[in-house]
Length: 245
Image (cartoon, rainbow, N blue to C red; front, side, top):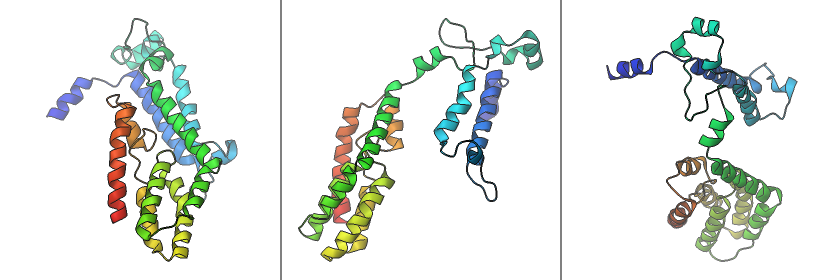
């Protein structure tokens, strides 16, 4: 009964909700059919092979800045859809004009998250493309000492790198080199690889490290300094436990 009451309080589906639902269905369909599926080659082959999911999302979202909102529809269309479905509401004094209005978007969007995420992506790409990550991995192969010390040093370095580079990229860069080094030093290669694999997931300090970190940061309740402070403590604990394991 509670859910039925909540459903009745929602009222009829508005015109804007219809348009956004249609837009979402089209977006999902384009995403799923962009790449090859069985004998179907995918539509990207005939349009632009290098088109990524983000570009497709922008392509489908931008028309929402042009499509008029319910309050701006002709009277005949409002009568056909129902007046109750076309009562557009928006925060602020300026009346709404389109499904998406730039004034509302720029005022309600956390731009610092975009810059943080974009900066992190650029840093990760630069670290890999410049060869810095590969150079660090090669230097690790020359580290001396016993097995425990080697695992501890590798864990610390991999944990540092994975804060700015994706887990998959970190594993692909360090995995092969550490496995070969372990074989040459007479260490257990499986244990070394497990250490690198676990440590590649120890990314708790920065918002750009993993999507969950970004979701937490996006709430605005946690500052980067607080996340880095507590994340560093978690990293140290995880490295110690992982190395001992």
